[in-house]
Length: 91
Image (cartoon, rainbow, N blue to C red; front, side):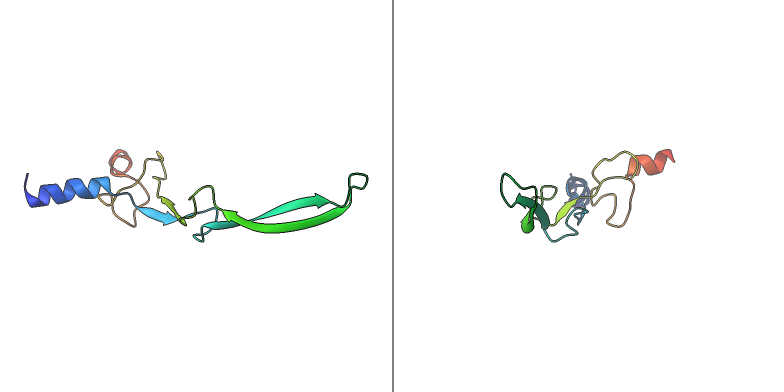
């Protein structure tokens, strides 16, 4: 295969990333934890701590999905597009 053909095949395998919608690209989320004062009272305090985001696993980025079919977009589709090639050809 030619160099151009190899480059196109390579682009079809590289996914496009976007900022994680859960943590807004930080990789961490703030979690509130409610701790009662004692077993006999229902009054307590709220503590918060940060945890690694479960959606992006702390990377801050997730794969960019197609708006229609949820297929993962690749660099062959383009960085700024919101739909995959198949959905654009259908519509």
